[in-house]
Image (tube, rainbow, N blue to C red; front, side):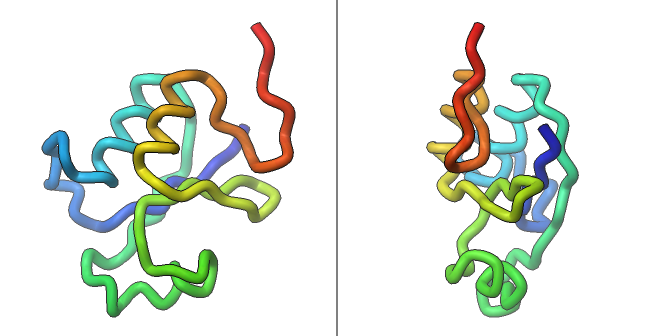
Length: 94
């Protein structure tokens, strides 16, 4: 599964409440490989994110087919539970 993690460029923000860090940590701990795509920390400068999703909020995970999942809690929970997949994919069994 090849995914892209779209997050803010504030890589220094490694505290529990920061949504981008929480998602990146969950992906790392779950052993999910991803390509890191950094965006501006300033929402007004996230036109590329708005073009992709219709909103300027981060983080989000983008799949190979162009679909994505938003919401730090949703992404982190799915990563930890082993159910992070593109919308419409069958969850892995095991």
